[in-house]
Image (cartoon, rainbow, N blue to C red; front, side):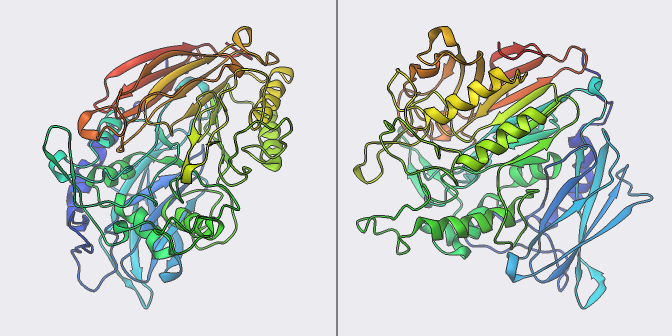
Amino acid sequence: MSHRPPFPGRRSVLRGSLAASAALAVPAAAGAAPAFALSGRPEAGWGVQAGDVTTDSGLVWVRSDRPARMIVETSATESFRNARRWHGPLLGPGTDFTGTTRLRGLPPGEQIHYRVLLADPDDPRRTGEPVPGTFRTAPVRRRDGVRFLWSGDLAGQGWGINPDRGGYRIYDAMAALDPDFFLCSGDSIYADGPISATAALPDGSTWRNVTTEEKSKVAETLAEFRGNFRYNLLDDNLRRFNAQVPSIVQWDDHEVRNNWYPGEVIAATDTRYTEKSVDVLAARANRAFGEYFPVSTLRPGAREGRVHRVVRHGPLLDVFVLDMRTYRNANTPGTQTTDPQGILGEEQLRWLKRELSRSRAVWKVIAADMPLGLVVPDTTEGRKNIEAVAQGDPGAPLGRELQIAELLRYIKHRRITGTVWLTADVHHTSAQHYLPERAAFTDFEPFWEFVSGPLNAGAFPAGALDGTFGPDRVFVKAPTASNVSPAGGYQFFGEVDIDGGSGDLTVRLREQDGTVLFTKVLRPGRVGQ
C-alpha cells in the first residue's frame, strides 16, 4: 500500500487564488494581447509553470508583458506566512520576456506554494498582481510513493484551441488525478503546422480554432517559433494545469519540422520555407523551447545546453529524458550494417549507459520521444526512409536498431533493474512487450514499452511492428482512419503509479476523459519482465 502524504488536492488549494488572478487570463481571441488588471505594472498573463522538480529543488517559469524583474515567493501554506523570497532574472526582449528561477534547498516530500511577482526594473516597489502555483517536491522516503502522467502531440494537424469544445479539456482530466508531475514526450508544438480559423469535420460540422499571426504559416523566424509556444498558453485549461502540475519536457520533430534530422536541407519545391537549412531552424526552435519551458539543462537565451538529462525523483524513480532528434544521423532506409551514430549519437549513448549504471532508483523510466518497435516511415518529399528505429525487416538489427541492440545488451549484462520505456509520437495508445524468445536479436532481457498521445492532435491508425526485438502488441486503441480530429475522440494520456509499500509500478492507459483502457502491474527489482 502506498503511503502518500496527506496533502490537500492542488485543485482545492489553488481554486481561490487562481480565481483571484482571473483578470490576468489571456483572452482567446485572434492575435489578442493579454488583458491586465493593473495598468502600467508588469504582469504575467501567460501563467506560471514549474519543471524538473527533485527532492530539494525546482524551476519556476514566467513570461512578462514588458521588462521586469522576476521575483518568486515560496511558502509551506497558501497564506504565504513566513514566505521565502527568491530574486530571479531580469526579463527582457532577449528571452521574449520569459525567465526561470531555480529554487534550491526546498524541503523534500512537501507541497510547495509559490507565487511570482514581476517588478518594474526602475521602481522595484511597483509590482504586478502575484500569480500563484504549487508543486510537490520528490520524497526522500520510499514509502511515500510516486504518481505521474505522460503524453505528447499538442495542436497538430491543424487542430488547435477550439472554444466550442472548451479548449484543451484533456488537461482538466489529467489535473483531476493530482499527479506529482507530467512528462511531455515531445511534439509540444507543431511549428510546421499552421492553424486556420476553421476546418470541416466528417459529419458536416465545423471545427473552429483560435488563431494567431504566428500560427498562420510554418515557423521560420525566432519570433514565429516563440509565437508557436505562446499559442498553446492561450488555453485556459493548459495554464491552469501548469500552475498545478510540474513538468518534465522533451522535444521531438514538430518543435522544428516534420521528420527533421541534423544537416537536412529542405527541397526547393517546398515553397512554404524560405529558410532551407534545417540546422538554422532547429537552433531557433531550441532557443524558443528553452525560453518557454523550465528545463534544468537549458537556460533562456543561452545558445548552449541540451535536452537529454536525468531527473531524479526520490528513491523510487529516475527519469532518463532522451533526445532522439538532435544527434541522429540522416533518415535512410535503415539497412546499413554499421551505424555508430544511430538515433542517439555516440556521446548520448555513452551518457545513457553511464547514468543507468549509476542509478540507484527502484524504477528507471526511459522517456523516449519515439517508439522502438513500431515502424515509422519518412515519406517527406517522396522519400522512402525510416523516421524512428524499426525499419520493417524482422531479421537481425540493421541501421539504428544496432544502437538500440547495444543498449539493450548493456542493460542485460550490467544487470540494470527496473527499466520501463515510455513514448508518444504515433498518435494512438498501445502497450508492447518485447521478448527475446520472439526476436531475431536475443541478447536482452524482456521489457515493456507504453505509448500514449495525442493530447490535442489528429489521431492515426497503429503502424506495423518490426520483429527484430520481438514485440507483441498486448493492447492498442487507434482509429482506422487517418487524422481523426479531437472531436472524434482517440486522445490519450498515460499514468504511472509506483506504490511506496510494495514498490510495484502500475501503468494505466487512459482516454481523454480519464477512463482507464488498459492496466499493467510490473514488479520491482527485476532486470527484465
